[in-house]
Length: 286
Ligand SMILES: Nc1nc2c(c(=O)[nH]1)N[C@@H](CN(C=O)c1ccc(C(=O)N[C@@H](CCC(=O)O)C(=O)O)cc1)CN2
Image (cartoon, rainbow, N blue to C red):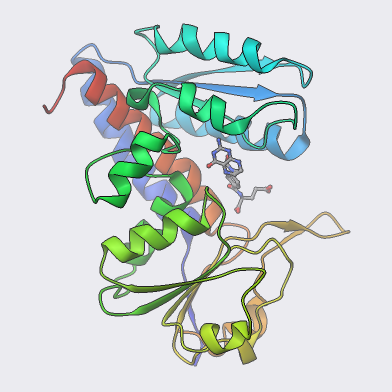
């Protein structure tokens, strides 16, 4: 079997074109969706993700700005900035790029963002609504994964979805989204014993371990769908996922590449959430 490659970048561009049309219509009603991204310090990867968000916003007609703060900024300074943005009617979406430096409590920051502007979907209010299956902002990477599975017609209902990784950004919420779609969900993590026993029974395997090429063909079930969330930079500067693409694509039925798989979908779902926020705050579609 040779797996069909799930082309996240292609799907992301198609969705962005559709969103651009929606933004044009909103602008005709006087609504200009606006995203503000806050970044602390100058970590090259974080800077490149933030610039990617600005570029993608511009391509879609969404207005955006980046607030750059020094790595030494205090938690209170960041909270003050968020407070100003919460009360600025022109700002529909607020995102603080993660990770944050250790002296800042990430949870305090996430909870300070108004739930109405929580385009990352990380606020406890958004997470609670996601758990109960109510309408809310859904976290971008998990939503991107769900959108990819649905766009490629991959059945979720009744299937066994195995998630490797239990981060708040990816692992935990993607499992919840698949559960909401009636999958049977198993979480694996660093303390899981005999992980292969689980991965080999997965119809849908989501890998978010942050370790290069650790999932190989012997770990997966024939005909499964493999979603690789890993982004690992090799010594030669090239990116590689957590999944050994070559061997796994000979056994799986679907596989995402790295790069151009999950990553571009993360940014696209952020744009989608920003449009949703702009509509919600402007009373459109209520
Ligand atoms: N506040 C947030 N912080 C972080 C999030 C998030 O969703 N919200 N996710 C990640 C980083 N991230 C977005 O911020 C992100 C990661 C990767 C990509 C992407 O497009 N990757 C490309 C490769 C890019 C490269 O060459 O380095 C790909 O996979 O094709 C976009 C966004 C952590 N922080």
